Length: 401
Image (cartoon, rainbow, N blue to C red; front, side, top):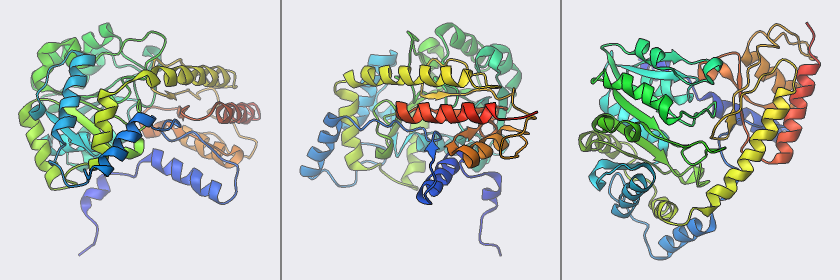
């Protein structure tokens, strides 16, 4: 009898975490490494949110809570959806978990059976397909392209849906591309979904507030209210509130689905961290001025990175509407040889050679389902970004045919 489950054969470790770990190991060994792999703001959690956590500790709010969140946080989530998205929910339609990833996993675990398909646009966040596989479903990848700024078209969505489709996973602004869907673009997708009443919608809105240049965020159930009864709208405090380590994600949807997700969570982690929940209450209910201030910094960094990468030989980098990622194409360097003697046959080889020869850590495009590309997270200092992009320019300029 073998020790490990056959389930593990269906999935692979997160490539983004692997890149971050490798960069940290090289740094610890004394190498000059600039890590552009982690999707984590370099800003500190705002003081009023930290203060709320300290108050909760001082008041002894350190016990178990309801499995999927305290009443106060669920009410704050309901208020947030009403205020920002014009979506009305009651607390029994809300689930709170230990991060956005757990919300998605709980929903998939609670609903997927063998043979059920999940349509996932590519490029995609690396965890979507593996979570589907982990719970026995089948990911169906719908390829977008640079010609549409990495956004899925209605025809592509239509072609991907079958009688076995249970979920469509939607993410805007996107990880890894930063691309955001306009109201009209999303309406074209929701029109397709209205023709397929057996398909549920899982909207990952984690980067909702990281939107630039006048881009207006919208979410599927807001654009098409008739999808309300089969949409799970998910979000969290990690990105916009610089609370990645606090591990609070949340979602709202039909009460029957939320109850099923609660059942899954009751037999895994049970309640999210109590102190983090009280901090999240303040994050959602408190002042939000800092988001606009942070976004000004992100726009400056985005423009810096896009300009410098587009100046690198063989690289083409679109301007994203949101999040804190860019997803440049390296089609112009495929087949060339680096100064260190590595032939660049694909984006994984490119990323490995870039790290080994220049100390810049990025995530290769194949991890996100679309090549030849790589992802840069610009959620780090201007100085680090300038130096990293300069190294990438030198790396590409030194290649030979």
